[in-house]
Length: 207
Picture (cartoon, rainbow, N blue to C red):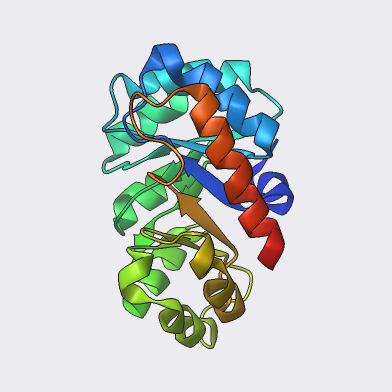
């Protein structure tokens, strides 16, 4: 499954910050059962490449596995070698974006200004992550949409729950990244599943 197919199915990225390798696949299976097709393991999680590898192997063909908080070219290589095909970051580092793009990976860097957005696109970004979305607001997206290339999807990440989906969607957001509202370290797969079902229902209600 590629990124475009995954986001067409459900443009919500499940952010599993702090997940441990031995719980990764059970949580991943629960997410896929709820409809998620985009799953991110931040690189500041315990043994992130082990979790990425388990998810990439266990969910092959059913979900795109990404690495988040990717801050260097070395981290890009480690994540890709583990099986990640989507590279996400909280910031705009054109060197990291270019390195990932050269490897044929999908990239979604974090942007907070129009200048960062254009720099990221120029470096080869596949999509943009509006971060932190709750601070920047839907109005930021609406303003950017007037000048950014229409083919670049924007995902809102950071502090947005189901109550905020409609405003961001109306402004032109293509999808959302969901973190602690969906997963916290130590949470059971069953609890993640219940939250995932509710989050997907919230998305369906406004899409």
